[in-house]
Image (tube, rainbow, N blue to C red; front, side, top):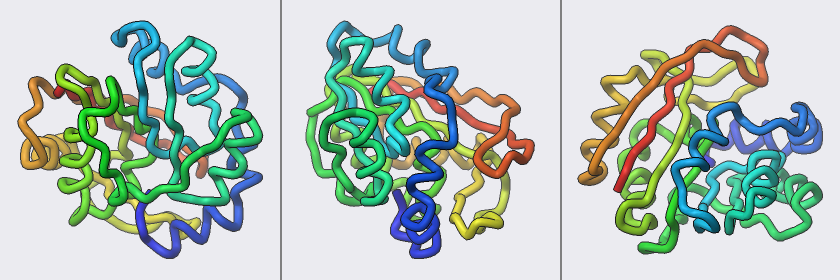
Length: 197
């Protein structure tokens, strides 16, 4: 999670409703991502939200460290997961070669554009050699806040690719796009980035 005060305030004030907003189904791309990992892989989740995706990963037998930048959301996720969730801003990530995978569904889109490259470098360091990293972003061309006050970096594919390239020497990076929606129920163009260390 970002250190943006308005974004953190939204999640603090709406943690229970936000965590309960969705069904218990995982993000559509999660199963495909997990299929690329070895059994029992150690996964760092950045932005667990209500914990639904972490629950799915745990049920599949993966070793998951769920985190969220909102302490209030972390408490909500703990109720679903029955285990601690670490409250942590992206910039606090300081692990080295500790995870087989990093999963960041709809969370790094809150990272300030000026901080994103550094955060991606931290993620690269946290991965083991050959580790996989999946993240999703809302596409756009101008950063700003939504009607709920949440900050978004709104990157296009070219700029997103540049952040990754400047962050670390990834073996590969694949960016895909699809149409969907989000908490605001508005039509949204999404970008998914799969990187291999």
